[in-house]
Image 1: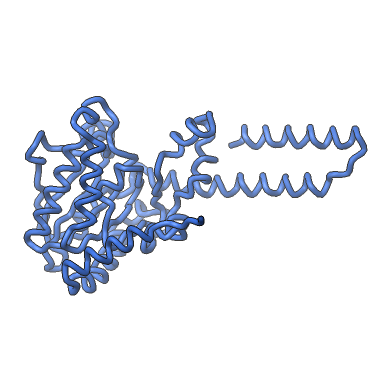
Image 2: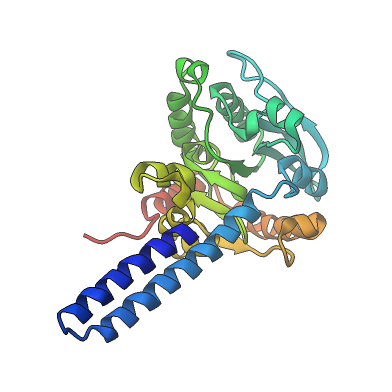
Length: 308
């Protein structure tokens, strides 16, 4: 960011020198440009603070929230096609006596766990496991709760060979038609199709310091700005904060975190999530499956802000 600011300052100095050379007064214009550069730098820095909080090593993971919110949680394994995927977990339990199915991306906390969990980047079998559990929930009339926290689906060779794109696409279709309530919460990073694979629901929320984006800031900077070092600029351009995403009508609301981030008080963050889930379940569980699907699809079709 300092490098970018220095480059902009250098260009301003060059413009000022040229104006002075030819006797042109552009002091007002230069002042306006300088203020815009400063505002952009400050804005990008604030957005990057959110990115760092979303990626914080001590930030509560899906299992942390599950253990704090769900009683008698039993994890279920395997997609019945290939294998189990520890990067995407799921199971059944009770939320204040209500039987629920819970699905979530699971990152590691240290090097060993990160390797075991593949950094929370799921393979096709992870998304097929999630779909299997969601269909089971539909059969037994259990609401589905998903915790989203991944930088994206795993882009490795084996993942591609086993159909990562197809598995996410099928989940998008099937979750949109699921005849049971679905509540999705972005608890950390919501990255690209990896997040969408378990991110279609009746209600979608983001924690205050979570991020949601079509691509990582580093990836965007490398592709569009031709410089991975400009990730802060890319993050600001992408509009990835909870406030930005809410304004674009992609999520239903923002769940506040304890001051300093969820990692400062995981229990308080978990109780805020639980409170919101209970409010929504009370309303959603009274609706017929047909009505749920109708309004879920209407919500999907109206998602986002655009102009013609």
